[in-house]
Image (tube, rainbow over all chains, first blue to last red; front, side, top):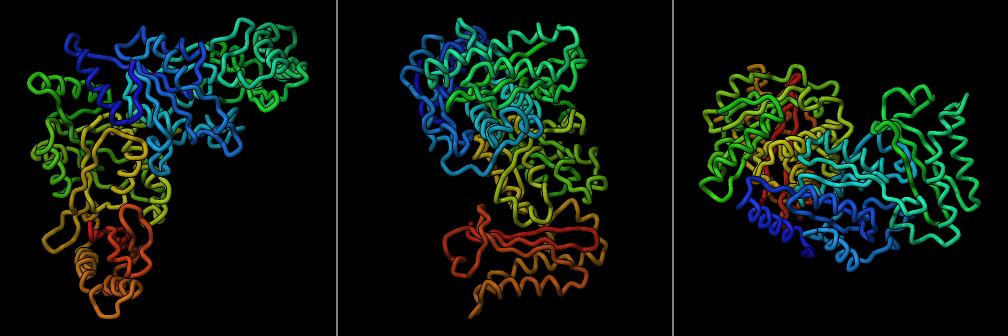
Length: 292
Length: 292
Protein backbone atom coordinates (compact mmCIF):
# COMPACT_ATOMS: atom_id res chain seq x y z
CA UNK A 1 0.00 0.00 0.00
CA UNK A 2 1.24 3.45 -0.89
CA UNK A 3 0.25 6.78 0.63
CA UNK A 4 0.11 9.56 -1.96
CA UNK A 5 -0.31 13.26 -1.26
CA UNK A 6 -0.46 14.92 -4.66
CA UNK A 7 -2.76 14.63 -7.65
CA UNK A 8 0.08 14.35 -10.12
CA UNK A 9 1.79 11.57 -8.23
CA UNK A 10 -1.45 9.63 -7.83
CA UNK A 11 -2.20 9.90 -11.55
CA UNK A 12 1.29 8.70 -12.46
CA UNK A 13 1.15 5.78 -10.07
CA UNK A 14 -2.28 4.73 -11.25
CA UNK A 15 -1.21 4.95 -14.90
CA UNK A 16 1.77 2.73 -14.11
CA UNK A 17 -0.30 0.29 -12.07
CA UNK A 18 -2.87 -0.05 -14.86
CA UNK A 19 -0.11 -0.52 -17.42
CA UNK A 20 1.49 -3.25 -15.31
CA UNK A 21 -1.79 -5.14 -15.02
CA UNK A 22 -2.59 -4.75 -18.70
CA UNK A 23 0.58 -6.59 -19.57
CA UNK A 24 -1.19 -9.81 -18.61
CA UNK A 25 -4.90 -9.00 -19.08
CA UNK A 26 -6.72 -6.85 -21.64
CA UNK A 27 -8.22 -4.36 -19.19
CA UNK A 28 -7.66 -3.24 -15.63
CA UNK A 29 -10.30 -1.87 -13.28
CA UNK A 30 -9.97 0.65 -10.48
CA UNK A 31 -12.28 0.58 -7.47
CA UNK A 32 -12.50 3.75 -5.40
CA UNK A 33 -13.86 4.74 -2.00
CA UNK A 34 -13.72 8.39 -0.97
CA UNK A 35 -14.03 9.10 2.74
CA UNK A 36 -13.57 11.84 5.31
CA UNK A 37 -11.50 9.33 7.25
CA UNK A 38 -11.57 8.21 10.87
CA UNK A 39 -12.64 4.93 9.45
CA UNK A 40 -14.79 2.29 11.03
CA UNK A 41 -15.88 -1.21 10.03
CA UNK A 42 -18.38 0.33 7.56
CA UNK A 43 -15.60 1.90 5.53
CA UNK A 44 -13.54 -1.26 5.72
CA UNK A 45 -16.41 -3.34 4.35
CA UNK A 46 -16.48 -0.99 1.33
CA UNK A 47 -12.74 -1.39 0.80
CA UNK A 48 -13.04 -5.17 1.01
CA UNK A 49 -15.83 -5.15 -1.54
CA UNK A 50 -13.77 -2.92 -3.85
CA UNK A 51 -10.85 -5.35 -3.38
CA UNK A 52 -12.98 -8.31 -4.46
CA UNK A 53 -14.26 -6.58 -7.58
CA UNK A 54 -11.24 -4.66 -8.95
CA UNK A 55 -7.59 -4.96 -9.89
CA UNK A 56 -6.61 -1.74 -8.17
CA UNK A 57 -8.18 -0.24 -5.04
CA UNK A 58 -7.86 3.46 -4.23
CA UNK A 59 -9.25 5.26 -1.22
CA UNK A 60 -9.10 8.96 -0.49
CA UNK A 61 -9.08 10.53 2.95
CA UNK A 62 -10.03 14.19 2.76
CA UNK A 63 -12.08 16.28 5.16
CA UNK A 64 -13.60 18.53 2.51
CA UNK A 65 -14.19 22.06 3.84
CA UNK A 66 -16.67 22.77 1.02
CA UNK A 67 -19.28 20.39 2.42
CA UNK A 68 -19.23 21.74 5.97
CA UNK A 69 -21.38 24.70 6.98
CA UNK A 70 -20.04 27.72 8.88
CA UNK A 71 -21.21 26.37 12.23
CA UNK A 72 -20.49 22.72 11.58
CA UNK A 73 -17.72 20.46 12.82
CA UNK A 74 -15.06 20.87 10.08
CA UNK A 75 -12.32 21.80 12.53
CA UNK A 76 -13.16 19.20 15.11
CA UNK A 77 -14.14 16.41 12.70
CA UNK A 78 -12.17 13.41 14.07
CA UNK A 79 -8.95 12.68 12.17
CA UNK A 80 -6.42 9.87 12.46
CA UNK A 81 -4.78 9.40 9.06
CA UNK A 82 -2.09 7.00 10.27
CA UNK A 83 -4.56 4.57 11.78
CA UNK A 84 -6.75 4.99 8.71
CA UNK A 85 -3.89 4.11 6.36
CA UNK A 86 -3.04 1.01 8.36
CA UNK A 87 -6.66 -0.17 8.42
CA UNK A 88 -7.06 0.59 4.70
CA UNK A 89 -3.98 -1.47 3.88
CA UNK A 90 -5.27 -4.39 5.93
CA UNK A 91 -8.63 -4.21 4.15
CA UNK A 92 -6.90 -4.31 0.77
CA UNK A 93 -6.32 -0.76 -0.46
CA UNK A 94 -3.42 -0.27 -2.89
CA UNK A 95 -3.31 3.51 -2.75
CA UNK A 96 -4.39 5.90 -0.02
CA UNK A 97 -4.75 9.42 -1.39
CA UNK A 98 -4.40 12.00 1.39
CA UNK A 99 -4.33 15.44 -0.25
CA UNK A 100 -4.02 18.71 1.62
CA UNK A 101 -6.74 21.36 1.32
CA UNK A 102 -4.28 23.40 -0.78
CA UNK A 103 -3.78 20.47 -3.13
CA UNK A 104 -7.51 20.07 -3.69
CA UNK A 105 -8.30 23.81 -3.69
CA UNK A 106 -5.16 25.69 -4.83
CA UNK A 107 -7.44 28.71 -5.20
CA UNK A 108 -11.03 29.07 -4.00
CA UNK A 109 -13.15 27.09 -6.45
CA UNK A 110 -15.37 29.14 -8.74
CA UNK A 111 -16.97 25.94 -10.01
CA UNK A 112 -19.51 23.78 -8.23
CA UNK A 113 -21.65 20.84 -9.26
CA UNK A 114 -25.24 21.63 -8.37
CA UNK A 115 -27.94 18.94 -8.13
CA UNK A 116 -31.45 20.36 -7.89
CA UNK A 117 -34.55 18.97 -6.09
CA UNK A 118 -32.87 15.94 -4.48
CA UNK A 119 -30.76 18.25 -2.37
CA UNK A 120 -33.54 20.48 -1.04
CA UNK A 121 -34.84 17.92 1.47
CA UNK A 122 -33.59 15.87 4.43
CA UNK A 123 -29.93 16.66 5.15
CA UNK A 124 -29.91 19.14 2.27
CA UNK A 125 -32.56 21.21 4.05
CA UNK A 126 -30.73 21.01 7.40
CA UNK A 127 -27.29 21.62 5.89
CA UNK A 128 -27.52 24.24 3.10
CA UNK A 129 -24.68 23.87 0.61
CA UNK A 130 -23.68 20.47 1.98
CA UNK A 131 -24.54 18.46 -1.12
CA UNK A 132 -23.08 21.07 -3.45
CA UNK A 133 -19.82 20.57 -1.54
CA UNK A 134 -20.16 16.79 -1.73
CA UNK A 135 -21.03 16.75 -5.45
CA UNK A 136 -18.14 19.08 -6.23
CA UNK A 137 -15.48 17.17 -4.30
CA UNK A 138 -16.66 13.76 -5.50
CA UNK A 139 -16.56 15.04 -9.09
CA UNK A 140 -13.01 16.27 -8.49
CA UNK A 141 -11.97 12.94 -6.96
CA UNK A 142 -13.58 10.97 -9.80
CA UNK A 143 -11.66 13.10 -12.30
CA UNK A 144 -8.43 12.55 -10.39
CA UNK A 145 -8.78 8.80 -9.79
CA UNK A 146 -10.87 7.91 -12.89
CA UNK A 147 -12.30 4.81 -11.22
CA UNK A 148 -14.41 2.18 -12.93
CA UNK A 149 -16.45 1.61 -9.78
CA UNK A 150 -16.98 3.75 -6.70
CA UNK A 151 -18.30 2.44 -3.39
CA UNK A 152 -20.65 4.32 -1.07
CA UNK A 153 -22.42 3.29 2.11
CA UNK A 154 -26.20 3.52 2.24
CA UNK A 155 -26.11 5.11 5.67
CA UNK A 156 -25.78 8.30 3.62
CA UNK A 157 -28.70 7.28 1.39
CA UNK A 158 -29.39 10.81 0.19
CA UNK A 159 -25.72 11.26 -0.67
CA UNK A 160 -25.87 8.06 -2.74
CA UNK A 161 -28.99 9.34 -4.54
CA UNK A 162 -27.29 12.67 -5.27
CA UNK A 163 -24.11 11.00 -6.53
CA UNK A 164 -26.02 8.52 -8.71
CA UNK A 165 -27.96 11.43 -10.15
CA UNK A 166 -25.03 13.67 -11.09
CA UNK A 167 -23.08 10.69 -12.42
CA UNK A 168 -26.02 9.89 -14.72
CA UNK A 169 -26.78 13.52 -15.62
CA UNK A 170 -23.14 14.29 -16.44
CA UNK A 171 -22.43 10.92 -18.12
CA UNK A 172 -19.52 10.17 -15.82
CA UNK A 173 -17.87 6.88 -16.79
CA UNK A 174 -18.10 5.29 -13.34
CA UNK A 175 -20.44 2.76 -11.77
CA UNK A 176 -21.77 3.63 -8.31
CA UNK A 177 -21.96 0.61 -6.01
CA UNK A 178 -24.42 0.91 -3.13
CA UNK A 179 -23.20 -0.81 0.04
CA UNK A 180 -25.29 -1.73 3.05
CA UNK A 181 -25.07 0.21 6.30
CA UNK A 182 -22.96 -1.57 8.88
CA UNK A 183 -24.23 -1.58 12.45
CA UNK A 184 -22.84 -2.16 15.92
CA UNK A 185 -24.09 -5.39 17.54
CA UNK A 186 -26.82 -3.41 19.36
CA UNK A 187 -28.06 -1.82 16.11
CA UNK A 188 -26.45 1.65 16.12
CA UNK A 189 -25.40 2.58 12.59
CA UNK A 190 -21.64 2.92 12.39
CA UNK A 191 -20.45 6.52 12.02
CA UNK A 192 -17.24 8.41 12.59
CA UNK A 193 -19.29 10.83 14.66
CA UNK A 194 -20.30 8.13 17.18
CA UNK A 195 -17.07 8.85 19.07
CA UNK A 196 -18.54 12.19 20.10
CA UNK A 197 -21.33 10.52 22.09
CA UNK A 198 -21.24 10.32 25.88
CA UNK A 199 -22.03 6.94 27.40
CA UNK A 200 -25.60 7.99 28.13
CA UNK A 201 -26.11 9.53 24.66
CA UNK A 202 -24.69 6.37 23.09
CA UNK A 203 -27.25 4.29 25.01
CA UNK A 204 -30.17 6.54 24.08
CA UNK A 205 -29.07 6.76 20.41
CA UNK A 206 -30.40 3.23 19.95
CA UNK A 207 -33.87 4.74 19.44
CA UNK A 208 -32.92 5.51 15.83
CA UNK A 209 -32.34 1.92 14.74
CA UNK A 210 -35.14 0.67 17.03
CA UNK A 211 -37.72 2.90 15.39
CA UNK A 212 -36.54 1.88 11.90
CA UNK A 213 -36.77 -1.81 12.84
CA UNK A 214 -40.40 -1.34 13.87
CA UNK A 215 -41.56 0.40 10.69
CA UNK A 216 -42.82 -2.72 8.92
CA UNK A 217 -44.75 -3.86 11.96
CA UNK A 218 -46.39 -0.44 12.38
CA UNK A 219 -47.31 -0.24 8.70
CA UNK A 220 -49.09 -3.61 9.05
CA UNK A 221 -51.28 -2.33 11.91
CA UNK A 222 -54.99 -2.01 11.21
CA UNK A 223 -55.97 1.55 10.30
CA UNK A 224 -52.40 2.86 10.18
CA UNK A 225 -51.86 6.08 8.19
CA UNK A 226 -48.73 7.84 7.00
CA UNK A 227 -49.29 10.45 9.73
CA UNK A 228 -49.63 7.65 12.28
CA UNK A 229 -46.38 6.11 11.08
CA UNK A 230 -44.57 9.43 11.41
CA UNK A 231 -46.02 9.74 14.92
CA UNK A 232 -44.88 6.26 16.00
CA UNK A 233 -41.36 6.97 14.82
CA UNK A 234 -41.26 10.35 16.55
CA UNK A 235 -42.66 8.91 19.78
CA UNK A 236 -40.03 6.18 19.79
CA UNK A 237 -37.22 8.69 19.26
CA UNK A 238 -38.65 11.11 21.81
CA UNK A 239 -38.75 8.33 24.40
CA UNK A 240 -35.04 9.13 24.67
CA UNK A 241 -34.91 12.32 26.79
CA UNK A 242 -31.62 13.52 25.23
CA UNK A 243 -32.87 13.17 21.62
CA UNK A 244 -33.74 16.29 19.61
CA UNK A 245 -35.26 15.42 16.24
CA UNK A 246 -33.90 17.26 13.20
CA UNK A 247 -36.15 15.38 10.79
CA UNK A 248 -38.20 12.23 10.36
CA UNK A 249 -39.04 11.85 6.70
CA UNK A 250 -40.53 9.26 4.35
CA UNK A 251 -39.71 9.64 0.66
CA UNK A 252 -39.47 7.70 -2.58
CA UNK A 253 -35.94 6.65 -3.43
CA UNK A 254 -33.86 7.84 -5.17
CA UNK A 255 -36.20 10.60 -6.42
CA UNK A 256 -36.94 11.90 -2.91
CA UNK A 257 -40.58 12.69 -3.62
CA UNK A 258 -42.63 12.96 -0.41
CA UNK A 259 -44.76 9.91 0.44
CA UNK A 260 -48.12 11.40 1.37
CA UNK A 261 -50.14 8.26 2.04
CA UNK A 262 -49.63 4.61 2.91
CA UNK A 263 -51.19 3.70 -0.48
CA UNK A 264 -47.85 4.73 -1.93
CA UNK A 265 -46.15 2.35 0.48
CA UNK A 266 -47.02 -0.53 -1.83
CA UNK A 267 -46.92 1.54 -5.01
CA UNK A 268 -43.92 -0.28 -6.39
CA UNK A 269 -41.32 2.36 -5.69
CA UNK A 270 -38.48 1.99 -3.21
CA UNK A 271 -39.23 4.05 -0.12
CA UNK A 272 -36.74 5.60 2.25
CA UNK A 273 -37.46 6.24 5.90
CA UNK A 274 -34.79 8.70 7.01
CA UNK A 275 -33.94 10.14 10.41
CA UNK A 276 -31.64 12.86 11.70
CA UNK A 277 -31.44 13.31 15.46
CA UNK A 278 -29.16 15.36 17.65
CA UNK A 279 -27.74 14.14 20.94
CA UNK A 280 -25.97 17.07 22.54
CA UNK A 281 -23.78 18.55 19.79
CA UNK A 282 -23.71 15.31 17.84
CA UNK A 283 -26.03 14.89 14.89
CA UNK A 284 -26.71 11.27 13.94
CA UNK A 285 -28.47 9.99 10.84
CA UNK A 286 -29.94 6.62 10.01
CA UNK A 287 -32.37 5.23 7.46
CA UNK A 288 -33.97 2.13 6.03
CA UNK A 289 -34.82 1.51 2.43
CA UNK A 290 -37.91 -0.60 1.71
CA UNK A 291 -38.78 -2.44 -1.52
CA UNK A 292 -35.35 -1.75 -3.01
CA UNK B 1 -14.99 8.83 -40.87
CA UNK B 2 -17.91 7.42 -38.93
CA UNK B 3 -21.08 9.14 -37.82
CA UNK B 4 -22.25 7.98 -34.40
CA UNK B 5 -25.58 8.80 -32.77
CA UNK B 6 -25.42 7.16 -29.35
CA UNK B 7 -23.17 7.50 -26.35
CA UNK B 8 -22.73 3.76 -25.95
CA UNK B 9 -21.71 3.25 -29.56
CA UNK B 10 -19.27 6.16 -29.43
CA UNK B 11 -17.64 4.82 -26.27
CA UNK B 12 -17.27 1.36 -27.78
CA UNK B 13 -15.81 2.65 -31.02
CA UNK B 14 -13.36 4.90 -29.21
CA UNK B 15 -12.28 2.08 -26.92
CA UNK B 16 -11.66 -0.10 -29.98
CA UNK B 17 -9.85 2.68 -31.86
CA UNK B 18 -7.57 3.35 -28.88
CA UNK B 19 -6.87 -0.36 -28.49
CA UNK B 20 -5.98 -0.67 -32.19
CA UNK B 21 -3.51 2.21 -31.96
CA UNK B 22 -1.99 0.94 -28.72
CA UNK B 23 -1.00 -2.25 -30.47
CA UNK B 24 1.83 -0.33 -32.09
CA UNK B 25 2.49 2.57 -29.69
CA UNK B 26 2.34 2.80 -25.91
CA UNK B 27 -0.39 5.46 -25.69
CA UNK B 28 -3.07 6.92 -27.92
CA UNK B 29 -4.46 10.44 -27.74
CA UNK B 30 -7.92 11.72 -28.57
CA UNK B 31 -8.49 15.28 -29.78
CA UNK B 32 -12.01 16.65 -29.49
CA UNK B 33 -13.93 19.63 -30.85
CA UNK B 34 -17.51 20.15 -29.69
CA UNK B 35 -19.64 22.42 -31.87
CA UNK B 36 -23.22 23.47 -32.46
CA UNK B 37 -22.60 22.66 -36.12
CA UNK B 38 -23.22 24.61 -39.31
CA UNK B 39 -19.48 24.68 -39.56
CA UNK B 40 -17.29 27.27 -41.18
CA UNK B 41 -13.57 27.57 -41.85
CA UNK B 42 -13.05 28.41 -38.14
CA UNK B 43 -14.31 25.02 -37.04
CA UNK B 44 -12.34 23.29 -39.76
CA UNK B 45 -9.12 24.94 -38.61
CA UNK B 46 -9.75 23.47 -35.15
CA UNK B 47 -10.31 20.00 -36.59
CA UNK B 48 -7.12 20.26 -38.65
CA UNK B 49 -5.17 21.26 -35.56
CA UNK B 50 -6.67 18.35 -33.60
CA UNK B 51 -5.71 16.06 -36.52
CA UNK B 52 -2.07 17.22 -36.39
CA UNK B 53 -1.79 16.69 -32.64
CA UNK B 54 -3.71 13.46 -31.95
CA UNK B 55 -4.15 9.86 -33.02
CA UNK B 56 -7.93 10.04 -32.99
CA UNK B 57 -10.10 13.08 -33.76
CA UNK B 58 -13.69 13.34 -32.53
CA UNK B 59 -16.11 16.15 -33.13
CA UNK B 60 -19.61 16.52 -31.77
CA UNK B 61 -22.45 18.37 -33.42
CA UNK B 62 -25.17 19.19 -30.92
CA UNK B 63 -27.38 22.24 -30.65
CA UNK B 64 -27.65 22.19 -26.88
CA UNK B 65 -31.04 23.49 -25.70
CA UNK B 66 -29.66 24.12 -22.20
CA UNK B 67 -27.45 27.02 -23.34
CA UNK B 68 -30.17 28.89 -25.21
CA UNK B 69 -32.47 31.33 -23.42
CA UNK B 70 -36.26 31.28 -23.79
CA UNK B 71 -36.24 34.03 -26.40
CA UNK B 72 -33.11 32.97 -28.20
CA UNK B 73 -32.59 31.22 -31.52
CA UNK B 74 -32.52 27.53 -30.48
CA UNK B 75 -35.21 26.52 -32.98
CA UNK B 76 -33.90 28.53 -35.86
CA UNK B 77 -30.19 28.00 -35.16
CA UNK B 78 -28.84 26.98 -38.59
CA UNK B 79 -28.36 23.22 -39.03
CA UNK B 80 -26.87 21.15 -41.83
CA UNK B 81 -25.47 17.93 -40.32
CA UNK B 82 -24.79 16.25 -43.66
CA UNK B 83 -22.65 19.07 -44.99
CA UNK B 84 -20.99 19.31 -41.54
CA UNK B 85 -20.09 15.61 -41.57
CA UNK B 86 -18.59 15.88 -45.05
CA UNK B 87 -16.53 18.94 -44.13
CA UNK B 88 -15.42 17.33 -40.85
CA UNK B 89 -14.25 14.22 -42.71
CA UNK B 90 -12.29 16.33 -45.20
CA UNK B 91 -10.64 18.22 -42.33
CA UNK B 92 -9.59 14.96 -40.70
CA UNK B 93 -12.24 13.91 -38.16
CA UNK B 94 -12.45 10.19 -37.41
CA UNK B 95 -15.76 10.26 -35.55
CA UNK B 96 -18.65 12.70 -35.79
CA UNK B 97 -20.91 12.38 -32.76
CA UNK B 98 -24.43 13.63 -33.56
CA UNK B 99 -26.62 12.80 -30.57
CA UNK B 100 -30.31 13.63 -30.32
CA UNK B 101 -31.59 15.83 -27.51
CA UNK B 102 -33.17 12.69 -25.97
CA UNK B 103 -29.79 10.91 -26.06
CA UNK B 104 -28.08 13.78 -24.24
CA UNK B 105 -31.00 14.55 -21.89
CA UNK B 106 -33.05 11.34 -21.44
CA UNK B 107 -34.75 13.16 -18.57
CA UNK B 108 -34.48 16.84 -17.68
CA UNK B 109 -31.09 17.28 -16.03
CA UNK B 110 -31.14 18.00 -12.31
CA UNK B 111 -27.39 18.58 -12.38
CA UNK B 112 -25.58 21.62 -13.71
CA UNK B 113 -22.00 22.80 -13.58
CA UNK B 114 -21.96 26.34 -12.24
CA UNK B 115 -18.99 28.68 -12.66
CA UNK B 116 -19.23 31.81 -10.57
CA UNK B 117 -17.90 35.34 -11.23
CA UNK B 118 -16.55 34.72 -14.75
CA UNK B 119 -20.08 34.10 -15.97
CA UNK B 120 -21.71 37.23 -14.54
CA UNK B 121 -20.26 39.60 -17.14
CA UNK B 122 -20.20 40.07 -20.93
CA UNK B 123 -22.30 37.37 -22.64
CA UNK B 124 -23.14 35.88 -19.24
CA UNK B 125 -24.88 39.12 -18.25
CA UNK B 126 -26.72 39.36 -21.58
CA UNK B 127 -27.61 35.66 -21.68
CA UNK B 128 -28.54 34.43 -18.16
CA UNK B 129 -27.99 30.69 -17.79
CA UNK B 130 -26.01 30.49 -21.04
CA UNK B 131 -22.68 29.52 -19.50
CA UNK B 132 -24.30 27.10 -17.05
CA UNK B 133 -25.71 25.36 -20.12
CA UNK B 134 -22.33 25.44 -21.85
CA UNK B 135 -20.40 24.19 -18.81
CA UNK B 136 -22.89 21.39 -18.26
CA UNK B 137 -22.94 20.12 -21.83
CA UNK B 138 -19.18 20.40 -22.27
CA UNK B 139 -18.71 18.42 -19.04
CA UNK B 140 -21.08 15.76 -20.37
CA UNK B 141 -19.26 15.62 -23.70
CA UNK B 142 -15.86 15.42 -21.99
CA UNK B 143 -17.13 12.51 -19.89
CA UNK B 144 -18.49 10.77 -22.98
CA UNK B 145 -15.47 11.30 -25.26
CA UNK B 146 -12.73 11.39 -22.57
CA UNK B 147 -10.42 13.41 -24.80
CA UNK B 148 -6.79 14.21 -24.04
CA UNK B 149 -7.08 17.61 -25.74
CA UNK B 150 -10.09 19.75 -26.58
CA UNK B 151 -10.03 22.60 -29.10
CA UNK B 152 -11.93 25.87 -28.76
CA UNK B 153 -11.91 29.03 -30.83
CA UNK B 154 -11.02 32.32 -29.16
CA UNK B 155 -13.92 34.10 -30.84
CA UNK B 156 -15.80 32.83 -27.79
CA UNK B 157 -13.08 34.07 -25.44
CA UNK B 158 -15.33 34.11 -22.40
CA UNK B 159 -16.44 30.56 -23.14
CA UNK B 160 -12.77 29.49 -23.27
CA UNK B 161 -12.13 31.22 -19.93
CA UNK B 162 -15.14 29.48 -18.36
CA UNK B 163 -14.13 26.07 -19.74
CA UNK B 164 -10.51 26.46 -18.64
CA UNK B 165 -11.75 27.41 -15.20
CA UNK B 166 -14.11 24.48 -14.60
CA UNK B 167 -11.59 22.05 -16.08
CA UNK B 168 -9.02 23.29 -13.54
CA UNK B 169 -11.46 23.56 -10.63
CA UNK B 170 -12.85 20.06 -11.21
CA UNK B 171 -9.47 18.47 -12.11
CA UNK B 172 -10.74 17.20 -15.45
CA UNK B 173 -8.03 15.20 -17.22
CA UNK B 174 -8.13 17.20 -20.47
CA UNK B 175 -5.96 19.94 -21.93
CA UNK B 176 -7.83 22.94 -23.38
CA UNK B 177 -6.22 24.24 -26.58
CA UNK B 178 -6.99 27.88 -27.42
CA UNK B 179 -7.30 28.48 -31.18
CA UNK B 180 -7.21 31.83 -32.94
CA UNK B 181 -10.36 33.42 -34.34
CA UNK B 182 -10.62 32.94 -38.10
CA UNK B 183 -11.79 35.93 -40.13
CA UNK B 184 -13.25 36.57 -43.56
CA UNK B 185 -10.85 38.41 -45.91
CA UNK B 186 -12.51 41.73 -44.97
CA UNK B 187 -12.04 41.09 -41.24
CA UNK B 188 -15.47 39.82 -40.09
CA UNK B 189 -15.02 37.09 -37.49
CA UNK B 190 -16.36 33.80 -38.83
CA UNK B 191 -19.59 32.71 -37.16
CA UNK B 192 -22.43 30.33 -37.97
CA UNK B 193 -24.76 33.23 -37.28
CA UNK B 194 -23.26 35.34 -40.10
CA UNK B 195 -25.68 33.64 -42.51
CA UNK B 196 -28.52 35.52 -40.82
CA UNK B 197 -27.15 38.90 -41.94
CA UNK B 198 -28.67 40.83 -44.82
CA UNK B 199 -26.24 42.19 -47.39
CA UNK B 200 -26.37 45.63 -45.79
CA UNK B 201 -26.01 44.26 -42.24
CA UNK B 202 -23.07 42.15 -43.39
CA UNK B 203 -21.37 45.28 -44.77
CA UNK B 204 -21.99 47.32 -41.64
CA UNK B 205 -20.88 44.46 -39.34
CA UNK B 206 -17.30 45.25 -40.30
CA UNK B 207 -17.30 47.96 -37.62
CA UNK B 208 -16.65 45.24 -35.00
CA UNK B 209 -13.33 44.08 -36.38
CA UNK B 210 -12.43 47.62 -37.48
CA UNK B 211 -12.81 49.00 -33.96
CA UNK B 212 -10.77 46.12 -32.50
CA UNK B 213 -8.01 46.72 -35.04
CA UNK B 214 -7.76 50.35 -33.96
CA UNK B 215 -7.48 49.70 -30.23
CA UNK B 216 -3.66 49.73 -30.06
CA UNK B 217 -3.45 52.98 -32.03
CA UNK B 218 -6.04 54.66 -29.79
CA UNK B 219 -4.32 53.49 -26.61
CA UNK B 220 -1.08 55.11 -27.87
CA UNK B 221 -2.76 58.51 -28.31
CA UNK B 222 -1.60 61.32 -26.03
CA UNK B 223 -3.92 61.75 -23.04
CA UNK B 224 -6.05 58.69 -23.82
CA UNK B 225 -8.06 57.26 -20.89
CA UNK B 226 -9.99 54.01 -20.46
CA UNK B 227 -13.21 56.01 -20.83
CA UNK B 228 -11.85 57.56 -24.00
CA UNK B 229 -11.02 54.14 -25.38
CA UNK B 230 -14.52 52.88 -24.65
CA UNK B 231 -15.89 56.01 -26.40
CA UNK B 232 -13.75 55.49 -29.52
CA UNK B 233 -14.91 51.89 -29.83
CA UNK B 234 -18.57 52.83 -29.31
CA UNK B 235 -18.33 55.68 -31.82
CA UNK B 236 -16.83 53.38 -34.43
CA UNK B 237 -19.56 50.79 -33.93
CA UNK B 238 -22.29 53.43 -33.87
CA UNK B 239 -21.05 54.80 -37.19
CA UNK B 240 -22.98 51.81 -38.56
CA UNK B 241 -26.64 52.92 -38.46
CA UNK B 242 -27.95 49.34 -38.11
CA UNK B 243 -25.69 48.48 -35.15
CA UNK B 244 -27.18 48.23 -31.67
CA UNK B 245 -24.52 47.72 -29.00
CA UNK B 246 -25.15 45.00 -26.42
CA UNK B 247 -21.82 45.59 -24.69
CA UNK B 248 -18.34 47.01 -25.16
CA UNK B 249 -16.16 45.77 -22.34
CA UNK B 250 -12.49 45.72 -21.37
CA UNK B 251 -11.42 43.08 -18.84
CA UNK B 252 -8.44 41.09 -17.65
CA UNK B 253 -8.23 37.63 -19.14
CA UNK B 254 -9.12 34.97 -18.13
CA UNK B 255 -10.20 36.37 -14.74
CA UNK B 256 -12.62 38.89 -16.26
CA UNK B 257 -11.86 41.63 -13.75
CA UNK B 258 -12.88 45.08 -15.03
CA UNK B 259 -10.03 47.24 -16.35
CA UNK B 260 -10.69 50.61 -14.77
CA UNK B 261 -7.71 52.61 -16.04
CA UNK B 262 -5.16 52.54 -18.81
CA UNK B 263 -2.43 52.03 -16.19
CA UNK B 264 -3.67 48.47 -16.02
CA UNK B 265 -3.20 48.22 -19.78
CA UNK B 266 0.50 47.68 -19.26
CA UNK B 267 0.13 45.96 -15.90
CA UNK B 268 1.35 42.62 -17.19
CA UNK B 269 -1.99 40.88 -17.41
CA UNK B 270 -3.62 39.77 -20.65
CA UNK B 271 -6.51 42.11 -21.47
CA UNK B 272 -9.62 41.29 -23.45
CA UNK B 273 -11.55 43.87 -25.44
CA UNK B 274 -14.91 42.25 -26.11
CA UNK B 275 -17.89 43.38 -28.17
CA UNK B 276 -21.44 42.17 -28.68
CA UNK B 277 -23.53 44.02 -31.24
CA UNK B 278 -26.94 43.31 -32.73
CA UNK B 279 -27.77 43.81 -36.39
CA UNK B 280 -31.49 43.24 -36.76
CA UNK B 281 -32.19 39.97 -34.95
CA UNK B 282 -28.60 38.78 -35.27
CA UNK B 283 -26.25 39.17 -32.34
CA UNK B 284 -22.57 39.15 -33.28
CA UNK B 285 -19.60 38.96 -30.94
CA UNK B 286 -15.95 39.68 -31.50
CA UNK B 287 -12.91 40.35 -29.33
CA UNK B 288 -9.19 40.86 -29.23
CA UNK B 289 -6.81 39.65 -26.60
CA UNK B 290 -3.78 41.84 -25.84
CA UNK B 291 -0.55 40.82 -24.09
CA UNK B 292 -1.49 37.13 -24.15
